[in-house]
Length: 24
Image (cartoon, rainbow, N blue to C red; front, side, top):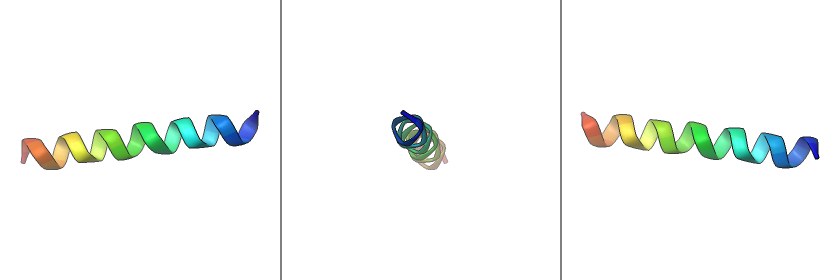
């Protein structure tokens, strides 16, 4: 369960970073 949580957090982080990069 912890691993799934980590994957979700990482995915969210990458998505956020990608959105920020796209905005820039």
